[in-house]
Each structure stands twice: as structure tokens, then as C-alpha cells.
Image (cartoon, each protein chain N blue to C red):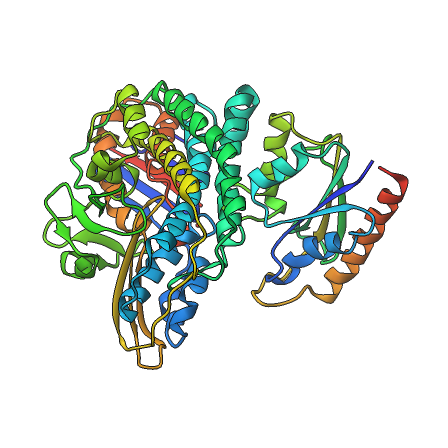
Length: 147
Length: 434
């Protein structure tokens, strides 16, 4: 079963690019989709996918930059305050909306990489890049297992 | 929220289901409102300042970044202004494509607001997610409508957020005829879904409130004005967009980082779906007009809570008009027009999903922007939102604190405020004093 990896973030806002960078790095082993976090698009991505899925995004939980968090998003409700959005609905709300609609894929794993800097025009910091590498390895191992 | 005999205090840390950060503070003394402030504390964004010195051709790309929900509005108003300076006459075929892109934005923005942001207020749900748990089919319909709007944005605009294809004079590239025609099936579905949306919202429990608004919107005798027009009001204003500054004025209030706009010598006014509907009812697509009449709407509606029904009527207009455009589409060649640079001042306006969006630019002989002024709809509606709340509060004083707070937030969401545009989260404080 093909693994769907949805990278969420903004490539022009420092550490917020990490979701896109991780997803882009696993294109050889997974079907990849890049998202700015627009909820309807995310729900549609999961609705149209029959296999397992991963969502990668930057987190702001107060832990050290680069910390990787893995959550079974089907079994756990995510904390909306971790994944920042300037709009009324963001990626976490998209997951909860998909759950309410019965539109979650057979498995959905949330991979968060702790971020610190979201300055416009900057790239992810070195700590975040280390976390990104760990996230890439994890996703590759899951794709290899076919989960 | 504590309630005592001497004081009643409301505090909501963040008003959700609005775009941006704002607050509402209300003080009641012996049942009288002694202070009411709808504040926007999102930091000023300085777009007008950093447009200065930039090439006039960059204006559509820069202003698109003001908002992720209504970038096409910013692109269109700014392009209109620059085209006026350059003396460009944009061919109808290009305008048709601009219209289609804009209506795509209306579809995605209105569907989001009607289904996920505003409808929960009417049915007692705290969020669109709660609504979705009990009404899966309804919310799924809203999401699919939004997705179709996004598809138009992606095809015509180059991407669904912050489109890159629009430019001064038209588009960098016109989409292929087959690709545009392929939108037809989805738009057929969208039209049916929009009609069902009108029926659905028309049976929601609509709170009673009548406000004597002066509605202000663009008007075009030949179409429901979206991409251009003259500025008209229900109070007799009928001016070219160039004359905005002669009739309207902006001022700063200490509790808001967004300027308040008023009609000179008169006061507050209302922009948005209710205003467009009042000014342009006769120009609505016949299917939208029929849907409005079947929903029990008159040609002018003064109840701000009926904005959700009018917004749904505009979904019908957007879907039906988009279908018409798709049916007659031929790729414009060239996809844009150009003219030699010349110094001048230009004004542009268009109807963003939330209302009239006015831009004014001055450029020098090199084509560099020397001055910019952007007046977004939420900034114009701020004083009217406060006036609505002043009218609403005395009618709901007998409700519980929780119910009052709910109704205040619902009343603010009548305007689908985009605080990001106006300068983002709303805090509500209501204090009752004896």
C-alpha cells in the first residue's frame, strides 16, 4: 500500500519549511503532497487516499528545536496550540474535521519537528535540520514496511 | 464569566472563526453601554509603506500577500489602479478571465464562512468541527464547494493561495480552453450545491435585528459588480472610484491598529454581501435572484444576521456566472496588454468577498510607486460593527452572560471580518457595572 506523505508549512518562513523539506525528501518511497495547511485541501487529500498517511509539520510546543514528535493522529486528538496558523482553521482543525467527517485514512501519523524561527526569507536552522533528518529516516522505515 | 449585582464581565481570550486578531471590550453601567470598542490589535503590517519604491508591475504580487483568503481582490484592485495610470484598456476576454478567477475566490471564501465559520453560531455549535460531527453531509457539501473555488484559483491563478498568474494588464498566461471547459462538471455540481445552501441557511434560526444601514458597494448596470464599477450607496452616493477620497475618510482610534472609515459628514456605512445585494439586486444572476426570492429575501435586507443567506445567494451567483464564463471561454490572445510607463495617480476598486476594496497609487516616470493607499473592507466595517453591537446589546440584556457573548460573536461574524487584511483572534470583554 502506498504511503501518502503530506508536508505542511511555508517554504519561505524559516523553520516552517521543515514539513515541505521532509516530504520532498521521501518522494522516492512515498506519494507526496505539499500543503500550506488549507483545511479543505488536506481533508480532500486524506479522503482520496486509501492507504496509510503521514502528515509532517513544524511544531511549537516549547521543547528544544529539532525535537521530533510522533503521534497516532487516528487514536489521539492533537493540541491545536502546537501547530500555528494565523487563520481560523489550520492543520490540526483539518485532522479533527476529517475525523468528524469520517474522512481520515486507515492510519494517520503526525510527525512534528519542533521549530523556533519563522522569520520571512530564512531557511530552517541547523537543529531543525537534524530533526528533519530523523523524521526522514522514520518515514523511510515506515514506507519500507509498507505501513 | 462572573456575574454579580454590580458588574458583569465578559472575557474571551480569542474569538475563533475570524481571520486575524482582534478584541471586543464592552462596559455596561446600570444597563447602559458606557464603552464599546471593537479593537484590532494585530500589528500594523506596513504594506503601503513598503510598496513605495517598488516597480508598479510588482503590485499584484506584493498585495496578494496581504491575505490568504482574498488575494485576488487585492490583485484586481491594484491592477485596476495601475491600468488607469497607464491608460490601458483591458479587452473583454481578459476581463472575463479576471471575473472567473475572482468568482473562484468568492466560492472558496463564502463556502468556508457559511459552512465552517458562521453556520455553527446559528445551530449552537462551538465550531465547524462540532457541526460536522452531527451534519456530515452538510459540511462535506461546503468543503466540496470550497474545493471547486480553489480549483478555479489554481487553474486561472496558478495556485490556490496567493496566485501568481495575474498581472497588470491581464495574465501572464491564459489557461487552455479544454482545461477551463473541464471546470464545467464541477461547476454544475456547485450550482446545485449553492442552491441547496440557500435553502439550508434560509431555515436557520435568524435573530431579529434591523439596522438602518447606508450600504456602499460597486455598481455596474450590466452585471453584479465584482471586478470594477462605480461606487454607489443606498444614501445617494454615486461616484467614480477616483472620488473615494472626496466622500470617505479614514481616522485612527486608540483601540485599533486598523483605520476606521466613515462617510464624511454622515458616519458609518456597511460594505459586503448585504451591501452588494442591496445595490446590485437587479444585476444578480437570474438563478441567484430567484433563489433569494424563494428564500424569502426582499431586494434590500437590513438584518445583519441574514448576511449568511445573502452570502449563500452570492454562492449561487458565483457558480452560475462562472458556468456562463466557462461555457463561452476562449483563451485571450495576447493574455495581457501593456503600455509605456508614465507618471500618474490611479484608483482601483473591486468587491472582495467581505466588501469594497479601494486602492490608490501614485507612480513616477520610471514606473516606481511613490505613494500607496489601501482601504480594506473590514477597516471600513469596523465602526459599523460597533454600531451594530450598540444596537444589539440592549435587546439581549436579559440573556445569560454566555448567551450574550455568543450573540456578540455571532454578530461580529456577520461581517466575516478579515483582520489580517485590516492591519488576526478576537478577545471579548463585557463588564456590567451598577
